[in-house]
Length: 454
Image (tube, rainbow, N blue to C red; front, side, top):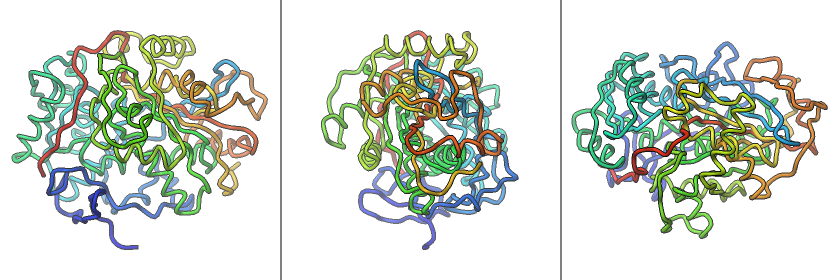
Protein backbone atom coordinates (compact mmCIF):
# COMPACT_ATOMS: atom_id res chain seq x y z
CA UNK A 1 0.00 0.00 0.00
CA UNK A 2 1.44 3.43 -0.90
CA UNK A 3 2.57 5.76 1.84
CA UNK A 4 -0.13 7.90 3.39
CA UNK A 5 -0.57 11.50 2.26
CA UNK A 6 -2.88 14.41 2.74
CA UNK A 7 -5.50 14.41 0.00
CA UNK A 8 -7.86 17.02 -1.37
CA UNK A 9 -11.19 15.14 -1.45
CA UNK A 10 -12.46 17.36 -4.28
CA UNK A 11 -9.80 16.54 -6.87
CA UNK A 12 -7.45 13.91 -5.42
CA UNK A 13 -4.41 16.18 -5.18
CA UNK A 14 -1.86 14.83 -2.71
CA UNK A 15 0.33 16.67 -0.22
CA UNK A 16 3.17 15.15 1.87
CA UNK A 17 2.51 14.49 5.54
CA UNK A 18 5.94 15.65 6.72
CA UNK A 19 5.15 19.31 6.03
CA UNK A 20 2.95 21.10 8.61
CA UNK A 21 -0.32 21.84 6.87
CA UNK A 22 -3.98 22.27 7.78
CA UNK A 23 -5.66 22.99 4.42
CA UNK A 24 -5.05 22.85 0.68
CA UNK A 25 -3.31 25.54 -1.31
CA UNK A 26 -6.81 26.68 -2.31
CA UNK A 27 -7.85 27.02 1.36
CA UNK A 28 -10.19 24.03 1.38
CA UNK A 29 -10.28 21.09 3.82
CA UNK A 30 -7.94 18.11 3.57
CA UNK A 31 -8.25 14.47 4.56
CA UNK A 32 -5.66 11.73 5.01
CA UNK A 33 -5.64 8.97 2.38
CA UNK A 34 -7.75 6.02 3.60
CA UNK A 35 -6.07 3.35 5.71
CA UNK A 36 -6.13 -0.40 5.18
CA UNK A 37 -7.68 -1.18 8.55
CA UNK A 38 -6.48 -3.63 11.18
CA UNK A 39 -7.52 -6.96 12.67
CA UNK A 40 -7.83 -7.95 16.32
CA UNK A 41 -4.27 -9.31 16.13
CA UNK A 42 -2.99 -5.78 15.53
CA UNK A 43 -4.43 -4.40 18.77
CA UNK A 44 -1.84 -3.63 21.44
CA UNK A 45 -3.51 -5.27 24.41
CA UNK A 46 -0.87 -3.90 26.79
CA UNK A 47 -2.12 -0.34 26.24
CA UNK A 48 -5.24 0.90 28.01
CA UNK A 49 -6.03 3.89 25.79
CA UNK A 50 -6.93 4.63 22.20
CA UNK A 51 -3.26 4.01 21.40
CA UNK A 52 -4.01 0.28 21.52
CA UNK A 53 -5.23 0.90 17.93
CA UNK A 54 -2.10 2.76 16.85
CA UNK A 55 -1.59 0.26 14.00
CA UNK A 56 -4.60 1.87 12.29
CA UNK A 57 -2.90 5.28 12.12
CA UNK A 58 -1.43 6.47 8.80
CA UNK A 59 2.07 6.94 10.27
CA UNK A 60 4.00 5.45 13.15
CA UNK A 61 4.10 7.82 16.11
CA UNK A 62 7.03 6.92 18.32
CA UNK A 63 6.25 9.08 21.34
CA UNK A 64 2.53 9.81 21.61
CA UNK A 65 1.03 12.46 23.86
CA UNK A 66 -1.47 10.62 25.99
CA UNK A 67 -3.40 11.01 29.21
CA UNK A 68 -5.16 7.67 28.81
CA UNK A 69 -7.89 8.93 26.48
CA UNK A 70 -10.26 6.38 25.01
CA UNK A 71 -11.28 3.01 26.48
CA UNK A 72 -14.30 4.74 27.98
CA UNK A 73 -17.03 2.63 29.65
CA UNK A 74 -19.79 1.08 27.59
CA UNK A 75 -22.90 0.89 29.75
CA UNK A 76 -26.07 -1.03 28.95
CA UNK A 77 -29.19 0.23 30.63
CA UNK A 78 -32.91 -0.07 30.14
CA UNK A 79 -34.81 2.62 28.26
CA UNK A 80 -38.47 1.69 28.33
CA UNK A 81 -38.60 -1.75 26.78
CA UNK A 82 -35.23 -1.24 25.10
CA UNK A 83 -31.71 -2.15 26.20
CA UNK A 84 -29.38 0.39 24.57
CA UNK A 85 -25.69 0.80 25.26
CA UNK A 86 -24.19 4.16 26.24
CA UNK A 87 -20.56 5.05 25.55
CA UNK A 88 -19.57 7.40 28.36
CA UNK A 89 -17.15 9.76 26.69
CA UNK A 90 -17.00 12.21 29.60
CA UNK A 91 -14.53 9.78 31.18
CA UNK A 92 -11.88 11.09 28.80
CA UNK A 93 -9.15 13.09 30.58
CA UNK A 94 -10.49 16.59 29.95
CA UNK A 95 -14.08 15.35 29.87
CA UNK A 96 -14.64 15.33 26.10
CA UNK A 97 -14.53 12.94 23.15
CA UNK A 98 -12.31 15.55 21.54
CA UNK A 99 -9.39 14.19 23.59
CA UNK A 100 -9.25 11.37 21.04
CA UNK A 101 -8.59 13.75 18.18
CA UNK A 102 -6.37 16.08 20.19
CA UNK A 103 -4.10 13.27 21.36
CA UNK A 104 -3.44 11.91 17.88
CA UNK A 105 -3.25 15.27 16.12
CA UNK A 106 -0.91 16.90 18.63
CA UNK A 107 1.27 13.78 18.82
CA UNK A 108 1.72 13.86 15.06
CA UNK A 109 2.33 17.60 14.90
CA UNK A 110 4.94 17.46 17.66
CA UNK A 111 6.67 14.60 15.85
CA UNK A 112 7.10 16.70 12.70
CA UNK A 113 8.45 19.67 14.67
CA UNK A 114 5.43 21.78 15.67
CA UNK A 115 5.86 22.98 19.25
CA UNK A 116 3.21 25.72 19.48
CA UNK A 117 -0.38 25.80 18.25
CA UNK A 118 -3.43 28.01 17.84
CA UNK A 119 -7.00 26.78 18.21
CA UNK A 120 -10.35 28.56 18.17
CA UNK A 121 -13.04 27.14 20.42
CA UNK A 122 -15.92 28.15 22.63
CA UNK A 123 -15.93 24.99 24.71
CA UNK A 124 -14.49 21.53 25.10
CA UNK A 125 -12.30 21.72 22.00
CA UNK A 126 -10.19 24.40 23.63
CA UNK A 127 -10.01 22.54 26.92
CA UNK A 128 -8.96 19.37 25.14
CA UNK A 129 -6.22 21.08 23.14
CA UNK A 130 -5.00 22.91 26.22
CA UNK A 131 -4.89 19.76 28.36
CA UNK A 132 -3.20 17.49 25.81
CA UNK A 133 -0.90 20.32 24.76
CA UNK A 134 0.21 20.74 28.37
CA UNK A 135 0.86 17.00 28.62
CA UNK A 136 3.02 17.21 25.52
CA UNK A 137 4.98 20.30 26.55
CA UNK A 138 3.52 22.38 23.74
CA UNK A 139 2.58 26.04 23.85
CA UNK A 140 -1.14 26.50 23.28
CA UNK A 141 -3.17 29.59 22.53
CA UNK A 142 -6.96 29.43 22.45
CA UNK A 143 -9.09 32.10 20.81
CA UNK A 144 -12.62 32.11 22.20
CA UNK A 145 -15.68 34.34 21.84
CA UNK A 146 -15.87 37.00 24.53
CA UNK A 147 -19.29 35.57 25.43
CA UNK A 148 -17.81 32.19 26.43
CA UNK A 149 -18.74 31.18 29.97
CA UNK A 150 -16.08 31.90 32.64
CA UNK A 151 -16.10 28.23 33.73
CA UNK A 152 -14.96 27.09 30.28
CA UNK A 153 -12.25 29.72 30.12
CA UNK A 154 -11.09 28.80 33.63
CA UNK A 155 -10.46 25.19 32.59
CA UNK A 156 -8.43 26.26 29.56
CA UNK A 157 -6.33 28.62 31.65
CA UNK A 158 -5.84 26.00 34.36
CA UNK A 159 -3.94 23.92 31.81
CA UNK A 160 -1.59 26.83 31.26
CA UNK A 161 -2.84 27.86 27.84
CA UNK A 162 -2.98 31.47 26.73
CA UNK A 163 -6.52 32.70 26.11
CA UNK A 164 -7.54 35.54 23.83
CA UNK A 165 -11.18 36.58 23.94
CA UNK A 166 -12.59 37.80 20.64
CA UNK A 167 -15.56 40.14 20.39
CA UNK A 168 -18.36 39.23 18.03
CA UNK A 169 -20.01 35.97 16.95
CA UNK A 170 -18.33 32.57 17.14
CA UNK A 171 -16.96 32.72 13.59
CA UNK A 172 -14.89 35.79 14.43
CA UNK A 173 -12.69 33.65 16.70
CA UNK A 174 -11.91 31.37 13.77
CA UNK A 175 -11.20 34.32 11.50
CA UNK A 176 -8.78 35.77 14.07
CA UNK A 177 -7.05 32.41 14.47
CA UNK A 178 -6.57 32.24 10.72
CA UNK A 179 -5.11 35.76 10.70
CA UNK A 180 -2.59 34.70 13.36
CA UNK A 181 -1.75 31.40 11.65
CA UNK A 182 1.23 32.93 9.86
CA UNK A 183 2.99 33.17 13.25
CA UNK A 184 1.71 30.01 14.98
CA UNK A 185 0.46 26.74 13.50
CA UNK A 186 -3.34 26.59 13.32
CA UNK A 187 -4.19 23.20 14.86
CA UNK A 188 -7.93 23.43 14.30
CA UNK A 189 -10.00 20.43 15.34
CA UNK A 190 -12.25 21.26 12.38
CA UNK A 191 -9.53 21.76 9.76
CA UNK A 192 -6.49 19.62 10.59
CA UNK A 193 -7.30 16.09 9.29
CA UNK A 194 -5.26 14.16 11.86
CA UNK A 195 -7.96 15.07 14.37
CA UNK A 196 -10.26 12.66 12.51
CA UNK A 197 -7.56 9.99 12.68
CA UNK A 198 -8.03 10.19 16.44
CA UNK A 199 -11.83 10.19 16.49
CA UNK A 200 -11.93 7.07 14.31
CA UNK A 201 -10.78 5.20 17.41
CA UNK A 202 -14.46 5.35 18.42
CA UNK A 203 -15.28 2.82 15.70
CA UNK A 204 -12.43 0.50 16.61
CA UNK A 205 -13.31 0.68 20.28
CA UNK A 206 -16.99 -0.06 19.76
CA UNK A 207 -16.04 -2.96 17.48
CA UNK A 208 -13.82 -4.41 20.21
CA UNK A 209 -16.39 -3.66 22.94
CA UNK A 210 -18.95 -5.74 21.05
CA UNK A 211 -16.75 -8.80 20.73
CA UNK A 212 -15.25 -7.65 17.41
CA UNK A 213 -18.54 -6.95 15.70
CA UNK A 214 -20.10 -3.78 14.37
CA UNK A 215 -23.38 -2.40 15.70
CA UNK A 216 -26.40 -2.05 13.46
CA UNK A 217 -26.79 1.69 13.93
CA UNK A 218 -24.69 4.53 15.21
CA UNK A 219 -26.49 7.71 16.15
CA UNK A 220 -24.27 10.68 16.79
CA UNK A 221 -25.11 14.25 17.81
CA UNK A 222 -23.43 16.30 15.15
CA UNK A 223 -22.14 19.85 14.90
CA UNK A 224 -18.97 19.90 12.80
CA UNK A 225 -19.16 16.12 12.42
CA UNK A 226 -15.80 14.90 13.74
CA UNK A 227 -17.29 12.01 15.74
CA UNK A 228 -19.56 10.88 12.92
CA UNK A 229 -16.78 11.07 10.35
CA UNK A 230 -14.42 9.28 12.71
CA UNK A 231 -16.95 6.44 13.02
CA UNK A 232 -17.41 6.40 9.24
CA UNK A 233 -13.67 6.19 8.58
CA UNK A 234 -13.04 3.57 11.25
CA UNK A 235 -15.86 1.22 10.27
CA UNK A 236 -14.97 1.66 6.59
CA UNK A 237 -11.41 0.53 7.37
CA UNK A 238 -12.69 -2.45 9.34
CA UNK A 239 -14.83 -3.49 6.38
CA UNK A 240 -11.87 -3.09 4.03
CA UNK A 241 -9.80 -5.29 6.33
CA UNK A 242 -12.47 -7.99 6.28
CA UNK A 243 -13.30 -7.63 9.96
CA UNK A 244 -16.96 -6.73 9.37
CA UNK A 245 -19.17 -7.49 6.37
CA UNK A 246 -21.46 -4.46 6.60
CA UNK A 247 -21.16 -0.87 7.70
CA UNK A 248 -23.39 0.19 10.59
CA UNK A 249 -26.01 2.73 9.61
CA UNK A 250 -24.91 6.18 10.73
CA UNK A 251 -27.41 8.78 11.91
CA UNK A 252 -26.74 12.44 12.61
CA UNK A 253 -28.85 14.03 15.35
CA UNK A 254 -29.12 17.82 15.52
CA UNK A 255 -31.19 20.43 17.35
CA UNK A 256 -33.94 21.75 15.09
CA UNK A 257 -32.74 25.26 15.97
CA UNK A 258 -29.43 24.65 14.20
CA UNK A 259 -29.69 21.69 11.84
CA UNK A 260 -27.89 22.36 8.55
CA UNK A 261 -26.94 18.71 8.02
CA UNK A 262 -30.53 17.58 8.48
CA UNK A 263 -31.66 20.29 6.07
CA UNK A 264 -29.24 19.23 3.33
CA UNK A 265 -29.80 15.51 3.78
CA UNK A 266 -33.59 15.86 3.70
CA UNK A 267 -33.27 17.98 0.54
CA UNK A 268 -31.18 15.26 -1.10
CA UNK A 269 -28.12 17.47 -1.64
CA UNK A 270 -24.64 17.79 -0.17
CA UNK A 271 -24.56 21.57 -0.35
CA UNK A 272 -25.98 24.11 2.14
CA UNK A 273 -29.76 24.52 2.28
CA UNK A 274 -31.38 27.57 3.83
CA UNK A 275 -32.96 26.86 7.22
CA UNK A 276 -33.62 29.35 9.98
CA UNK A 277 -31.11 29.26 12.84
CA UNK A 278 -31.83 30.06 16.49
CA UNK A 279 -30.01 29.64 19.76
CA UNK A 280 -30.11 26.13 21.17
CA UNK A 281 -29.45 24.37 24.43
CA UNK A 282 -27.29 21.98 22.39
CA UNK A 283 -24.66 24.68 22.04
CA UNK A 284 -21.84 22.29 21.20
CA UNK A 285 -23.61 21.32 17.98
CA UNK A 286 -24.56 24.85 16.98
CA UNK A 287 -22.47 24.91 13.80
CA UNK A 288 -24.31 26.88 11.14
CA UNK A 289 -22.03 25.95 8.22
CA UNK A 290 -20.18 22.67 8.89
CA UNK A 291 -16.88 22.65 7.08
CA UNK A 292 -17.12 19.00 5.99
CA UNK A 293 -20.80 18.94 5.01
CA UNK A 294 -20.15 17.05 1.77
CA UNK A 295 -18.21 14.29 3.52
CA UNK A 296 -20.83 14.00 6.27
CA UNK A 297 -23.69 13.60 3.78
CA UNK A 298 -21.65 11.04 1.83
CA UNK A 299 -21.00 9.00 4.98
CA UNK A 300 -24.70 8.99 5.87
CA UNK A 301 -25.68 7.86 2.39
CA UNK A 302 -22.97 5.23 2.12
CA UNK A 303 -24.09 3.61 5.36
CA UNK A 304 -27.81 3.78 4.60
CA UNK A 305 -28.37 6.07 7.57
CA UNK A 306 -30.07 9.42 7.94
CA UNK A 307 -30.66 12.50 10.05
CA UNK A 308 -33.08 13.78 12.66
CA UNK A 309 -33.70 17.23 14.12
CA UNK A 310 -35.22 17.60 17.60
CA UNK A 311 -36.95 20.48 19.32
CA UNK A 312 -35.56 22.13 22.44
CA UNK A 313 -38.33 20.56 24.54
CA UNK A 314 -37.44 17.09 23.28
CA UNK A 315 -33.78 17.59 24.10
CA UNK A 316 -34.48 18.89 27.61
CA UNK A 317 -36.94 16.08 28.35
CA UNK A 318 -34.44 13.45 27.22
CA UNK A 319 -31.66 15.07 29.23
CA UNK A 320 -33.77 14.97 32.38
CA UNK A 321 -34.65 11.35 31.77
CA UNK A 322 -30.97 10.46 31.38
CA UNK A 323 -30.23 12.25 34.63
CA UNK A 324 -32.88 10.21 36.44
CA UNK A 325 -31.07 7.10 35.27
CA UNK A 326 -27.73 8.33 36.57
CA UNK A 327 -26.32 9.08 33.13
CA UNK A 328 -25.43 12.72 33.66
CA UNK A 329 -22.44 14.31 35.30
CA UNK A 330 -22.77 16.72 38.24
CA UNK A 331 -25.78 18.98 37.93
CA UNK A 332 -23.82 22.16 38.70
CA UNK A 333 -21.56 21.43 35.77
CA UNK A 334 -24.52 20.88 33.47
CA UNK A 335 -25.98 24.20 34.57
CA UNK A 336 -22.68 25.91 33.92
CA UNK A 337 -22.60 24.95 30.30
CA UNK A 338 -23.49 21.31 30.00
CA UNK A 339 -22.70 19.51 26.81
CA UNK A 340 -24.49 18.85 23.59
CA UNK A 341 -23.45 15.24 23.62
CA UNK A 342 -25.77 14.28 26.44
CA UNK A 343 -28.75 15.40 24.50
CA UNK A 344 -27.48 13.41 21.56
CA UNK A 345 -27.03 10.17 23.35
CA UNK A 346 -30.60 10.24 24.53
CA UNK A 347 -31.93 10.30 21.03
CA UNK A 348 -29.83 7.28 20.21
CA UNK A 349 -31.26 4.84 22.72
CA UNK A 350 -34.76 4.70 21.42
CA UNK A 351 -35.44 2.05 18.90
CA UNK A 352 -32.49 -0.25 18.96
CA UNK A 353 -29.90 -1.63 21.22
CA UNK A 354 -27.74 1.45 21.05
CA UNK A 355 -24.21 2.17 22.03
CA UNK A 356 -23.96 5.75 23.19
CA UNK A 357 -20.85 7.84 23.33
CA UNK A 358 -21.11 10.69 25.78
CA UNK A 359 -18.31 13.19 25.96
CA UNK A 360 -18.41 15.55 28.91
CA UNK A 361 -15.87 18.05 29.90
CA UNK A 362 -15.72 17.57 33.70
CA UNK A 363 -16.46 13.74 33.11
CA UNK A 364 -16.22 -14.84 24.58
CA UNK A 365 -14.71 -13.00 21.46
CA UNK A 366 -17.36 -12.80 18.78
CA UNK A 367 -16.94 -14.68 15.54
CA UNK A 368 -15.60 -12.70 12.64
CA UNK A 369 -18.84 -13.17 10.71
CA UNK A 370 -19.44 -9.50 10.13
CA UNK A 371 -22.69 -9.64 12.09
CA UNK A 372 -23.96 -6.16 12.92
CA UNK A 373 -24.84 -6.01 16.55
CA UNK A 374 -26.26 -2.62 17.37
CA UNK A 375 -26.52 1.11 17.01
CA UNK A 376 -24.30 3.92 18.19
CA UNK A 377 -25.70 7.27 19.18
CA UNK A 378 -24.40 10.48 20.74
CA UNK A 379 -27.30 12.66 21.86
CA UNK A 380 -29.80 13.01 24.66
CA UNK A 381 -32.73 13.09 22.26
CA UNK A 382 -31.70 9.96 20.41
CA UNK A 383 -34.51 7.69 21.67
CA UNK A 384 -37.22 9.89 20.18
CA UNK A 385 -35.09 10.37 17.09
CA UNK A 386 -34.76 6.65 16.44
CA UNK A 387 -38.47 6.07 16.79
CA UNK A 388 -39.07 8.87 14.35
CA UNK A 389 -36.57 7.47 11.90
CA UNK A 390 -37.92 3.95 12.23
CA UNK A 391 -34.42 2.52 12.10
CA UNK A 392 -34.99 -0.12 14.75
CA UNK A 393 -37.53 -2.04 16.71
CA UNK A 394 -37.56 -2.78 20.43
CA UNK A 395 -35.42 -5.79 21.25
CA UNK A 396 -35.05 -7.93 24.29
CA UNK A 397 -31.83 -8.44 26.16
CA UNK A 398 -30.36 -11.69 24.73
CA UNK A 399 -29.11 -12.48 28.21
CA UNK A 400 -32.52 -12.01 29.77
CA UNK A 401 -31.69 -8.83 31.65
CA UNK A 402 -34.39 -6.42 32.69
CA UNK A 403 -32.70 -3.18 33.53
CA UNK A 404 -29.51 -3.67 35.49
CA UNK A 405 -26.34 -1.89 34.54
CA UNK A 406 -23.51 -3.68 32.81
CA UNK A 407 -20.15 -2.16 32.01
CA UNK A 408 -17.71 -2.92 29.25
CA UNK A 409 -14.59 -1.49 27.76
CA UNK A 410 -11.65 -2.80 25.75
CA UNK A 411 -9.82 -5.34 27.86
CA UNK A 412 -12.71 -5.94 30.27
CA UNK A 413 -14.18 -9.36 30.93
CA UNK A 414 -17.62 -8.03 30.07
CA UNK A 415 -16.63 -7.01 26.58
CA UNK A 416 -15.23 -10.46 25.91
CA UNK A 417 -18.55 -12.01 26.95
CA UNK A 418 -20.58 -9.63 24.83
CA UNK A 419 -19.73 -11.52 21.64
CA UNK A 420 -22.01 -14.34 22.76
CA UNK A 421 -24.84 -11.93 23.51
CA UNK A 422 -24.76 -10.18 20.14
CA UNK A 423 -26.47 -12.98 18.25
CA UNK A 424 -28.35 -12.82 14.97
CA UNK A 425 -31.92 -11.64 15.50
CA UNK A 426 -30.97 -9.18 18.23
CA UNK A 427 -30.28 -5.59 17.32
CA UNK A 428 -27.85 -3.65 19.45
CA UNK A 429 -27.55 0.10 19.65
CA UNK A 430 -24.80 2.43 20.85
CA UNK A 431 -25.55 5.93 22.07
CA UNK A 432 -22.65 8.34 21.97
CA UNK A 433 -23.08 10.75 24.85
CA UNK A 434 -21.00 13.90 24.55
CA UNK A 435 -22.00 16.36 27.26
CA UNK A 436 -21.95 19.66 25.46
CA UNK A 437 -25.35 21.02 26.32
CA UNK A 438 -26.57 23.10 29.20
CA UNK A 439 -29.99 23.62 30.69
CA UNK A 440 -30.18 27.16 29.38
CA UNK A 441 -29.58 28.51 25.87
CA UNK A 442 -26.03 29.47 24.97
CA UNK A 443 -25.06 33.10 24.92
CA UNK A 444 -23.25 33.05 21.61
CA UNK A 445 -24.30 32.59 18.01
CA UNK A 446 -23.74 29.38 16.06
CA UNK A 447 -20.39 29.16 14.40
CA UNK A 448 -20.02 29.32 10.65
CA UNK A 449 -16.54 28.12 9.61
CA UNK A 450 -14.87 30.18 6.94
CA UNK A 451 -12.44 29.23 4.26
CA UNK A 452 -8.95 29.33 5.67
CA UNK A 453 -5.54 30.02 4.36
CA UNK A 454 -2.82 27.37 4.23
